[in-house]
Amino acid sequence: MESLGSALNPLQLQPHDDGQRSETCAATKLLQCRELGLSVNVVSGKFDRPPENSPDLSTEEFLARKAVIAQVEQLMVGPGAEHLSWQPILSKYEIVKSSAKKSRDWGHLLFTTATSNQFLLVMIFPDECNCGNFSHHDYAALTKFHANKFLCLAKYIWHANQPPKWIRATYLTPSTGYSIDPVFAPLQTDSAANEPTALASFNAHPSGRYLHLDVKDITPALTPSEAERIDTLVARTERTKKPMPAALRAQLVVREDEKGRAKPDVGGAPWREGVKRACAFCEVVPHGKVKLQTCSRCKLVQYCGKECQTMAWPSHKHFCKKV
Image (cartoon, rainbow, N blue to C red; front, side, top):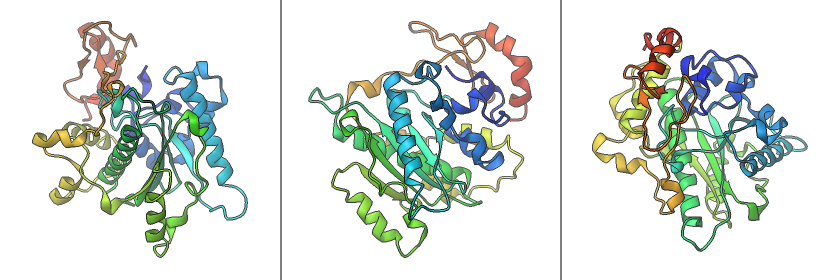
């Protein structure tokens, strides 16, 4: 279920709040990292508790993420460790609230540093099989898709203020023991001289599971509706946003008639399954073909009906009227 607090007040969460740890809106998290600081947004504490306390993840998904976080922490200590450490800020995310329509639209475990302009993405998948639903092709496509789209998001939000540099991504499965290559985490590309070498070595990794994407190499991935919702969230911050040049927007947002380009090239049936959401007020997930109604003004929260929307309005209006 989605966090009611984050839906109503996306940038005013308390440090170490459970809603903070289970926040699924990547745009909100990026804004919080700059507005509130990285330490407030770290989700490591979520994995200090039993899996039952995290209903947004299956037990296997929970344990896999916990193992990856522990590995990254180990890579940040000892000889050669950099002064900037990676911290997990999202354990499962969509680009902006209510944007995920299918299973393929969810990103997984995301790390950043205190500068919030470099990122690590780790996707967690079941083992590949011959059924056609779980394949290296789909996993590689999803990993590249989410890496590119997240970097588009970061560039969209921070195009005029400490813009993002790059993102590294990989995918892990049970057969790999959810083990990451030690070269994945060190901040080797801080030096411009080392950047071409690091990029080539990552994209030529023998496993075929690693990639390094520089911000100059991204392709448009945000849909017009996602851009509209991101603008709504950015408008809530006190920081004045400079207008985005039309040429830059075209590098990040696909045209309305080309929205098909903003979908990953995957064929497995599980990735086409629809996302079931809970009402932002009563937190009930509707059954059958019942669809939630989206707030027509902010387009960020959904309700199961007029009654819940009316009940939620006294709290929601403080956010919605500022849009």
